[in-house]
Structures are given as structure tokens and as C-alpha cells.
Length: 353
Image (cartoon, rainbow, N blue to C red; front, side, top):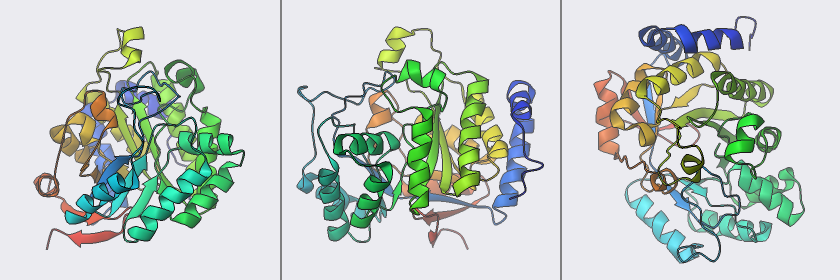
């Protein structure tokens, strides 16, 4: 693509700090319309399945993880996973977002068997699973490369990988909020290797801990540069740090909740800066349905998932829920056309004439 006129980091910083919210909304809406002239807003019907909550990484912003000896630690059985997928199929679901904690003992053969079981029994369900930190640790404990992990999981039925674990792609931030997590370079490398194998992924950002505006733009720059290289990101999704029940809030008690204004400002500038990422999701799960709807006027063209089940951000205090009918009505309220999509952003069903 032509990058000669693209937004610079300095311009992005100026917009974040100085532009009015109204101006940002108008600029982002104009850019969104250029990319999506039919004014179709999409969503996906899926379910988050966290196959285990056992994790050794101990991220300070996470309230979901448990250690192996904790009373409420678990690894789901195949029967438990099957029951969750059966329930998803009953409501017309097409995708599972399949993630766990980073279990200290599970190697590649466990994951191969698990993916093969699901893809064989449920060939119509898309497996969108395993974040970069999971891939990184599976590679380390199994003594194989990122590429080998991804290749073997793809052969068993893995379709795409989520962008979880990105938080802020600046090691100055990561070293404080998740010191045991993989660094920026390795997060990007996992996604680079996935894209080379034609495993598409999403890019994410969690803001609202200790990062600066400059570090947020550094994050966007990392995403934009890799997208220039591979074209493998299908969408960008950002959400605010949910602080309840987290170690980070205990260590840094003056972390302030992020305002709706802040979320919408960041979303609008992301739409303008990430000129090579076609789809941007609204994070109604953390922002609530009203701001989730407002996000459609600030650059988002997708409402993400109906979230039949969500355990991670809800453990940290987010309790918002929405079903398909609510999503359809919310989209129509903005004057846009609602449509159900699959993981690859192909439209499966239109709810407009």
C-alpha cells in the first residue's frame, strides 16, 4: 500500500492530546466509511472456552489465573468442552475462542490431541485459539520452534490465533505489569510465524495501567509495521484495564479507571493510524453496550462477539452481556446494517434488506 501520506507518530500524539472528541469521531467515521462504504457492521456468535485456569506467569493485571495446588484450579475434560460446544451450536455459534492459562507442564502433544478432538468432532466450528504466550511456552517446554508449534496445531485443525497477551507492546511497560511474559519482540515473532503459515490473527491492546501516550503509539507502530510485512492481522481490538481483584491495583493503588472519553479518543486515533488494518472491534464487554455502540461512531466496524461465555475480564470486574438480538438492535440504532460473520469476516447472515 502507499505509505507516503500515512499518519506519523508525532501527528498521532498531537491528536491524542489536543483534538476535540467530536473532531476525532468525524475523522474516524470518514476513514471507516472509506474502508466500509456499504455501512455494514458485523458481529460473531462464539464462546470463550478457557480449557485451564492454571498458569505460572502470574500477570499482575489478571484475576483469572490459579496455581496447580489451588482448590479451584482446573483442566477441562473433553466431555466438558464438548458440552460447551454443543450449547454454542444450539444458538447458531460458529467459533470458539480457545485459551487457557499457561500451564507449566502441558506439552505440544496435549494440545495436538485437544485440537484434533475438537476439529474432528465439530468440523464446522472454527478454532480461534492459543495466544502468543501459550505458543511461546509450548515451544519452550516441548523444545521446538514457534513455527513447529503452529504448523503442528494447524495440521490438527487450528484456524487462527487471538492477539491476547499484547497488553502494551513496549517492554518498559511489560517489565512492570507482566515481568514473566514474553517480550515485545517475541510476541511479534509468534504472530509473524503464524502469518507465514497462513494462520491469520488479531492484534489487541490493553490500556490503562502505567503506559504513556507515546508507549501506546509505540504499540500501534509495532502492529502497523508487522501488518505492512505480513498482512496477517484481521482486526484490531482494544480494551481498558479492568482492575478489580488484581495484584497490580494493590501494588499501584493510584491507577485510575479509564473514562469513556479516553476509550473513544484512543479508538478513533487507532482507526486513523492503523491504515492497513481493515477491521476494528468495539469492546462493549469492558465498556458496556452504550459506549460499545458509540464506538461505531468512532471508527469501529465490528461489535466482536456475543460472548456466550467470558471468564477472564469478568474475573477482574467486567460483567457486561449482550445477545444477538440486542446486538442487531444496537447496530440498527446507529443507522448501520447488522450482519453475522465468521472468524474470517465473511458474512454468514444479513439482518437488513
